[in-house]
Image (cartoon, rainbow, N blue to C red; front, side, top):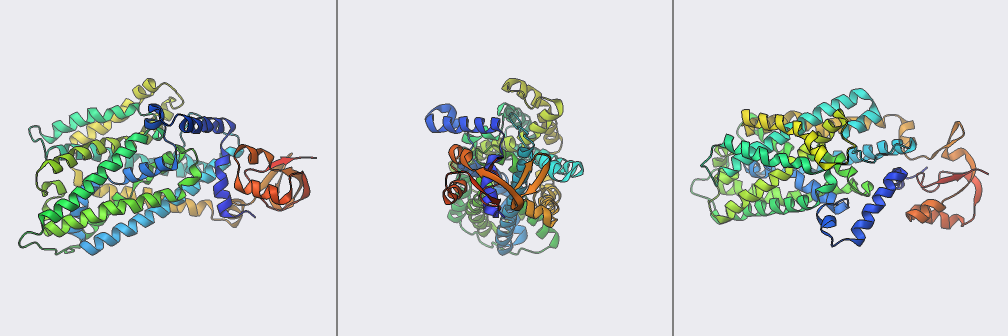
Length: 474
């Protein structure tokens, strides 16, 4: 029987021949045209790109509201809940990656090509658990992403008001809605390379500005730290932290954009660990400096001294919210494209035109419901808890609920004529030349060397990589 590590590393070979060719061309372009503008700014499918996307997507407006949550929870609870939700979220992100790998494996056996098609979470649920789970995943994910996009537009208007109050917040929502609508021209997460990098840099600056500015300001006279005082406030603060680590709605799309998605399994955890270095120091410092005063100031910018550094942080957060809006809306664009039959269209302009009906209702909701706090709490309490934690965990348990399913996940199964044989019972002559030559798989090369370079006639005993094995009949 194959080990779990072997199967996870081998999953990348489940691409169809077309997808393999496309991925190789992209890797070749990155290797040989690394200094070209198109490669640097546009084509991002490496593990680093995925890490930047995950880390950048986790922290946005919540960075500015976490001190407010600390004033509801208290310092100790705020720090512990961040660590707890972050690590638990990383685990469920890993479960999602396992389910994506399983789905991709099954489709590869059916010779399904995903050229010009982005796999999404609801399709994984459909392929593994059926149409009812597809409906559940689609409903929760789309609703979560819809309100996440609305929150970003409301946050843009709220932040810009701190440096320019000549226009009311609703007017600013009109303006930023038009700006964010330009995200329809970004085809997929594969093309967010430069934006993810810049976005993480912007949140890093803002987080450390908040921490340093709070320490420089110091504690004023009579500052109190009385939280937690009320159970309602405690759980309200907890939902905001829950929302902070709820970026799983785009996990599958980020994986699909990778050239080697099997490398994703630890990326979300590493991104979360970096996010801890931003959220914990900044929220702790601001709460230490202002204490219970934060209960009346949900946005940390309202208490920090007005100067050039704060204005720079506001501007950078505005740009980052544009990026986060794109992250939240892009999966919705994909869903809409599939509904109207435009998903496989290669023209960027045609796809952008087809995506506009998705932006309009988001823009409309942000204008008529400019209430950031209640929407944020509702999204955290209901949508994130199901989308990020409950549904992925249940889906993983149900997919592998039977011992046979858990065993077949790692056991070679070979189709011979009209019969299916387990890897422990297939008498055949076999070799591993193709994958050894094409991709240099370490397991295949090692097994090939151990058994010799000729054709081996023996009982196939579950050795080597099941995805890379090439069967030859004598």
